[in-house]
Amino acid sequence: MPRAPRHHYHVYVVELDDRVWNNARFRRCNPDYRLGMPFVYVGMTGLDPDVRFDRHKAGIQSNNYVHDYGVRLRPDLYAVYNPMPYRAACDMEVELGIALRERGYGVWQA
Image (cartoon, rainbow, N blue to C red):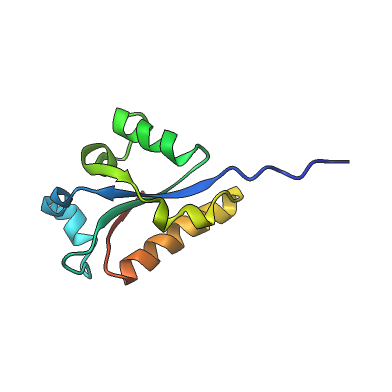
């Protein structure tokens, strides 16, 4: 009997240091940011989110905002969705970023 495919993709959210707001490009991409809300990066990976965060911080296939400003993972914002199939993770990455922006977060997505 064929085995069902193992879902191993994850969305993840990294909290960014407040200093990211000094970056003009980040500010331009977040015109509806609400003062006092967190700044985050939303990503998708086939790795464990902890491993992916460590790779960002080490500069391995890293997003510059996470490398320079990443503080910690925010599993409270993403763990409920994981793991999932690849296509679902791609879609959820976009949907989660939109939802956080609507709540007033400052969001960056690759």
